[in-house]
Image (cartoon, rainbow, N blue to C red; front, side, top):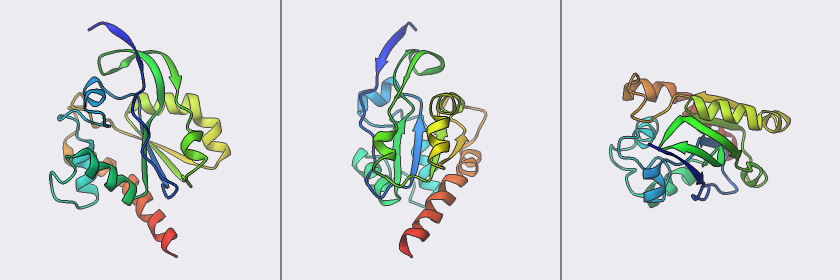
Amino acid sequence: MEAQHIEHTLEPIFDERSRVLVLGTMPSPKSREVGFYYGHPQNRFWRVMEALFELPSHSLVENDMRRAFLLEQHIALWDVLASCTIEGAADASIVDAIPNDLTRILGKAPITHVFTTGGKATQLCQRMNRDMLSARNIALTGLPSTSAANARMRLDQLVEAYRPLAHAVTAGNCHAKQ
């Protein structure tokens, strides 16, 4: 596959109540095609969310349901990069990376924790946003990729690895209700 320069086209999902921010690297070709994050049917992100939040299987298949779930749980969703050169969906091939301006979300929502999905997202976020997150006292936690390319991890292992995200959401929801 040939490398292409890609501009991020998906709007971030958040509102003024979002407290946890989940960042991938860049939408895959399939996600760009369907117009929503983690849109490839083989990507396990939405199945992990269903299991973590004890939702019925296949309850997060429609984009509107996914958006409503995220906002209800106070989870913001976006990507580290605004543009890059990439071969297909291969994060390892990323060059010429330009970051998204996270202050777009951080300036409007009381984010307390950032989670990145995959090693490359973690690496890029640490390199491009560490100082800003640190200055705002926002924790950063790297999580494994939910991509089918991460075949070494079964769904149940991914769910356990993502448990800190659910804890951050639950802790934030408890504080908000007080």
